[in-house]
Amino acid sequence: MYDIAQWGLGMDDSGPTAIYLPDKDHKNLTFYYATGVKMTHEDFGRGYAVRFIGSRGVIDIARGFFETLPGNLTARGFKDSDIKLYESNDHYQDWLDCIRSRKQPLSTAEIGHRTATVCFLTNIAYELNRPLKWDPVKEEFVNDAEANKLRSGMVRAPWKMSV
Image (cartoon, rainbow, N blue to C red; front, side, top):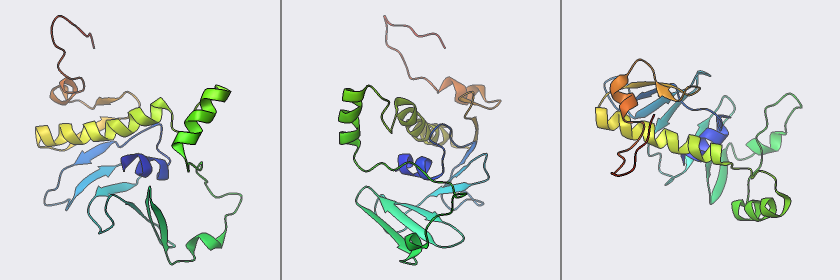
């Protein structure tokens, strides 16, 4: 559910700046963002849900549910100054509507790319078995030639790709 996590963090067009595997300082796979947010990948008993923990409560969200603690958290309303995310309830209908209107869908190819990137960063960290620093603007590992070599997969002959 990295797509929901990225969306909820307002990071659809970015990504983490550091990835840490579980170690003595990190109980779980941990991502840090330039905004100061720390995101952990852990089982909190809700299947593949995402949990946002804020100063006023907790939100658990997945494709099949949206629950808050306290239960009336959403009833508090929003101020004009609050940050609001776009609403996305039906990707299929949005896609069909965009075919007709020629507008971009709510979940663009860039958003899909950024979500997949979080998965790739995780896989590379596990393959190298060490923490990594990532520049989400340049989309490359910081001062890490070994990790940067793993950004693109093997290309079988006779095809070639220059990076």
